[in-house]
Image (cartoon, rainbow, N blue to C red; front, side):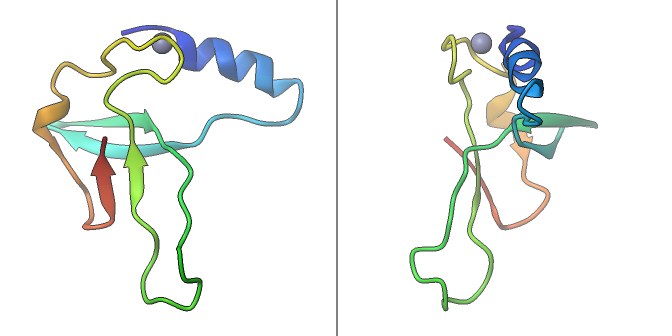
Length: 81
Ligand SMILES: [Zn+2]
């Protein structure tokens, strides 16, 4: 697993910013994963927009979690891409 998240967060911290994280259960452990910002197409539509987490690091392309296919979403509102 790469260290891009930590490095990017170090650069962003100077601007009071950090990457957004979602937590998923992988087998018997809770894993924090980067999320891709999403929004509703129709703001009046029901429910919240899906949470999207990349399977590969958006900065270097390395697989984020070899067990990504075994990730069990904590809610119906999560998708892995
Ligand atoms: Zn990376």
